Amino acid sequence: MTSVTPAPRRSPRCRRRTRGGHTEVVDPHPPDEPGTTMGPAERRGVLRVIIGFAVVAVVLPVVGLLVVLRGDDPAPSGPPELVVDGPYVTAADVGGVSALYLEIANGGGADRLVGVTSPVAGQAVLHATEARDGLLLMVPIEGLPVAAGGATSLRPGGAHVMLVGLTVALEPGDEVVAELRFERAAPVTVRAVVLSPAEVLDRIDAAEDPRP
Ligand SMILES: [Cu+2]
Image: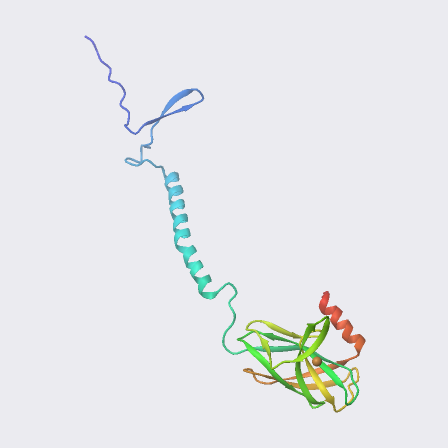
């Protein structure tokens, strides 16, 4: 009798791979995973990829939409929230002219400095400084914007409040009261210290070269 030994059956999905010069058969069906071509680790890997794509496909457009709706640097709206800091004036003789400098920070909506009064001056005028033909000229301005979420500086060489017709001499160390009026915010009363010309120069140097 001739016995025929049947060839070992092999799953149709078996693959061959060559490793180190010999060929081995790889059965993609683990015994406990009938009908699937992936083991638990592979499935977790695929799931991670799918979840990753879902995050990219869903989350990124939502974030992008929020950025578009809010803008890159969203400015606060609503009422202005002003904080006036560091007010000072220059020393001057009675009848003379002085300048008021300060910083206005705004944590709220846009506003505008529209006027200043002070009991030590016959008139307080908002001035800007402009360069014309190589000269720095002071120019009266109607108002000074204080941007939403921004800050406005009144400083030597820039915008300032000109105190004209001083009713008293302003001596270094004295204090001058002034009231700032805004388009939207309530008036702000400041107490500005009188600085000598040398002290003003020190302030300018400190502002240009801030050190802790
Ligand atoms: Cu001026």
